[in-house]
Length: 310
Image 1 (cartoon, rainbow, N blue to C red):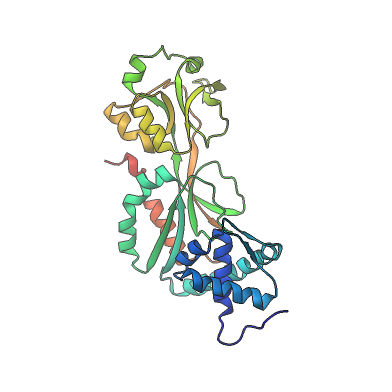
Image 2 (cartoon, one colour; image 1 turned 90 degrees about the horizontal axis):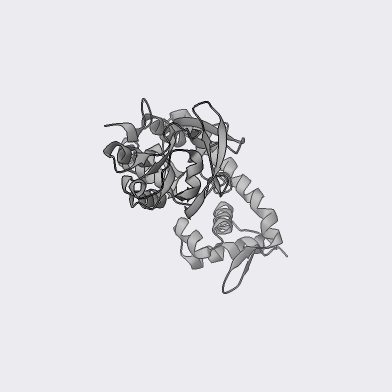
């Protein structure tokens, strides 16, 4: 039996509480995001469940999950919030004043090196925008997580998103002079099989690197991955410490190559470049806050990327 929501209840607030709880699968985390107490959020969920006549979550002492009813209701609730956001964006476009909470995802190492130092200036320029930045190398679903814009490195995978290229992501094989001085010769790609390799585990293929010869011939070279990590910064630090050969992006190694703390390995063999892009949901009205942030990102990479500037 359903219990109608009376005039003192805010149906939209109940839906927001449900969606945030469904995304977090934690009342405590959802309550923090919504600036509520856990007990207050729990009451909102209970009130929504009563109004729907269905239990939306199953809760034990150890875990929390959506019920079948919750799984069915979630996309409809998300659509309601998305439509309201788009309506807000359409009206905000009339006055063009960037404001509101902007949710951003950026890759961990890239974000710390290239984005984080520029954030204070962005906040100074746009005092009415609140930034909520998550540094992660995981591929986040922008729609379901309600992310406004993300920076992604690599080949675009999701054709439902719009993108704006920020820069070319050059990558190099690098090692410290100390490592190379005490290791076997490394004059040919096949020599990599006899070296300690430091491998970024998000790269396609767990046991090889793909190189391109001066004659544009592409080959896959099996590697001895002594260290695998999903964080490029840790591979950079291992390479600096002389632990082996790493395949790393220019934004990470530019300064170390310039100072000689790292040197290029097999410099005549090229690693295929990838893209650094800003991606965002394909909406009819791009929010001024999102447009402002993307435009600001562009200034960090034109005419040359920030890491190549003096």
